[in-house]
Image (cartoon, rainbow, N blue to C red; front, side, top):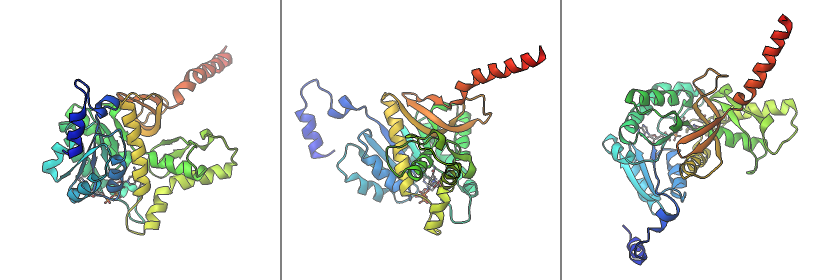
Length: 325
Ligand code: NAD
Ligand code: LMR
């Protein structure tokens, strides 16, 4: 559509494919709730991501302005804004990754579960549209309560006959970002966070953090509590003006980038995420774990528990057998 694009096209040697399709595959990313507190900075960060070729920004209001604004940034992707239910299908069509930060945020004194009544309906409607217009897309669920909105999405997809457990993710990257910050405050550390995304269901594993630090028990306890209460810390600091938006946009951009890299076949892409659990150790159908991302979404859930199970089972049986002999 731009002058330069046509110049580039004309300048291409005969038979050669365009620069973008040659080096990086075309990928469409849709953001649902793109005009919100998270949606806007997330739209900006996705516009800066060279793996994105088309960026669809959808909301019930204000997307023309956000799209016009972000669209003036001279990076790879073409930006389009979509507003209102009539344009949702177009926004979703051909999407490889759909990121959902649509819904209301907490105010001081509320739990994430207090958002259920409003956000459950929003997520249900958006997921019905995903099932219809881009059933093969990877879904990154940000809307709270994540512990419930991900199961809602799964049920909607099951009813529509499109459910693929490898492509549905609850975004818990902000818990990991916080755990890393509180652990060391620098970029090159890693802290796995498992469980869910609310209060004590957020379980950072500082014992598995790298590089290793010999933390005292009370330090681990304090770091764990601060990570679990991280969302509330921001909600209280914002004093009624919403919850984490900028750090969430950062975390959401990291997770979406990991999904895109996985789709593009980049090896060893591992992030923690709330996904369908394959573990027979926890009977919970969903559990946040370390996940290896690949061309099909979830390539492997690295729960760690499966690995220890055979040895533990054998040792238990040995003891029982000995005592009964
Ligand atoms: P916000 O109110 O600033 O923005 C929400 C946006 O969603 C608004 O622009 C609104 O118009 C839009 N919206 C509402 N209904 C919609 C619909 N049916 N379709 C499309 N868009 C719709 O809120 P926010 O601060 O951006 O937070 C959004 C959600 O993300 C909240 O539920 C919040 O709790 C959650 N959140 C999750 C995490 C996490 O770690 N997973 C972190 C922070 C916030
Ligand atoms: C967060 O962890 O920041 C989000 O889940 C928003 C919230 O309500 O705390």
